[in-house]
Image (tube, rainbow, N blue to C red):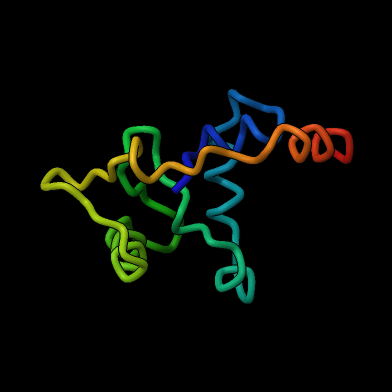
Length: 97
């Protein structure tokens, strides 16, 4: 699991979480099956609405992958959050962008 803000920060734009959400919302066709968009959630640990899909679809996909939600519909990010790429990878990616 990763948050929109984490993805933005990895890409060198820590305040662009909304842009990450918009980019994921624009996925169509084969990219929907290739990009693991369902694994990107809000900083509060909740599924968020995605253009053309509801949060319940995202939750269903995550539950099929074994992700557990509490009664309030939150994922325990302390337990499931991806720690992020190694420093060497981030540095290389930023130089390519």
